[in-house]
Length: 368
Image (cartoon, rainbow, N blue to C red):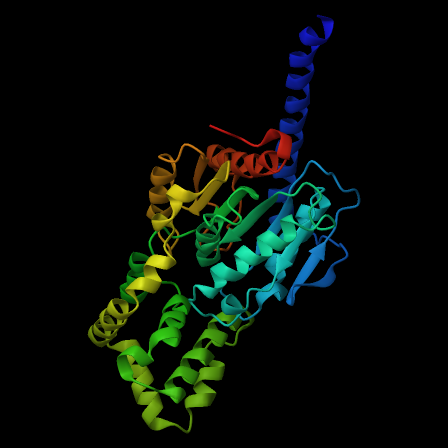
């Protein structure tokens, strides 16, 4: 009798403590991301079924916490992107095992269903490895195109019950509409996404063009390195003695009618691939208890309407609890300066990351 009386009280107290801890982790996460302080933490290189990964372990392993799989972006840096490593170290600092796997198609900027296959394999192998994942459940943290690909992967039957929560930053809902916007918009701050699209599919419109494809790859590398002041340096060097290729490239880039026409030809030919990479096609099969959608209000590459669409569709899934946070503190994958004048938006963002931390505890997974 006494035990039955105290158990609900004890359970409430335990969950309250974990909510408070998760909220403090969320505060620390935002602070560390927006400070100049470097998190110094050991990083181990391992191979998971031949896939190179970085493993970042906490000082003390909590067997009730899921392992965080941190998926890098569509970037030649892959797992060596300093932003990814910074986030992984913060998760380890907060007591979570963090695994950062190399997704080769994403590293080579390939829009391929193979990325979904590799993420599925990584999740399955991690969850079934007692050393990497003592609780046999994983959390996923990813941004942009990678986040959407993770949503697609998590719907697959082999891993649908192994993923306990997912945090998606700036995800897209539908591949075709996302790509059309990237191709046709004249308001993009950079053309990285456009470079990736034509690098993947230019031959479907122009036929085999190895040198034009190489020029597009250099444009990707320049876009990736532009923060260091090397914008267009590699591309200009490559095109300096190739007048025909230079004319082709600049015509494709500067003639919006030609660009749109080529894009329409390509999109028709890859419709099946677009459907396979569109989360909206798979959300009904997701079993993940908690999904957090965070999107910059003024994201110039993937508009926030995509996360709104994902949210509306996920609300129809009875197995999933979904949280949507639209914030002015993100652009596209890049943080903006935090302003205390927007305290409401700041608390909303803080709440989203706190939910991610709380849902990482296997005995507290949020269910509808």
